[in-house]
Length: 294
Image 1 (cartoon, rainbow, N blue to C red):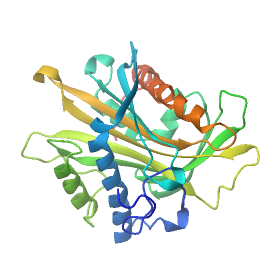
Image 2 (image 1 turned 90 degrees about the vertical axis):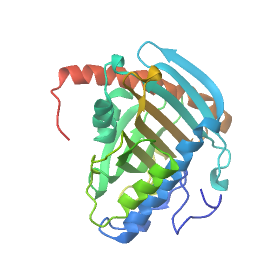
Image 3 (image 1 turned 180 degrees about the horizontal axis):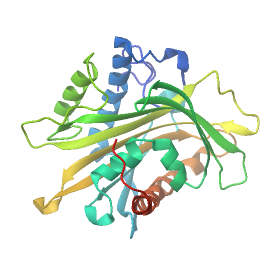
């Protein structure tokens, strides 16, 4: 992850700490590829390390199945008291969704779809498209269910398909992904061509950005968060078919007058709730809307 308080390769650490919009390179430059490589490297390491994160609460529901939550202390001093909170779950096709559905509803139009199954979201506005369908800046607002000011966030949203690989998020997969990212001729979606059995995967990364077109709203508290979602195909137990492996972790600072202890205690339940909420919404949406090619 690089230095706990500094930067890696000239870029800020992957944490809930704002970066200036002016520091994001244009998408047609080698610096942009290094920008992506920096955050992908951090995300890959996070995903590989999740088996060692400390278990907290577990949840179970008819729609979402079993969800295990974990926590990792912050590795950045600026936000030392805010840990990374993880949820991980696996979902077979009998939940009503395939990997292609996860990709369609999380990889593409991520924020617009999210507003449909997270009731607390009151605003989703795309501020800038550094590279459409890959790197975009979004302004989102949330209504908090307690007596305090609503929160808004300005976030970089990175949604990236990864090259298919036999072991998603392994060191070898990371090397193949970075080589592809740094290829000046790469397409938005990597080729599926492979001579070995491989599993598909994608990531959704978010981190706070200070953007000049979105000044602080006096009626809201400008909060921050960073998050990663790692979605991949995995062999089902017994080797019969595949399941979808879904990991999501967030580091958040709601700021304002909400005590840190209260924020941290609430996180497992908050993130676990999104699993059945997403699946119930996605199954219904899929039934009501004809499939669209992406």
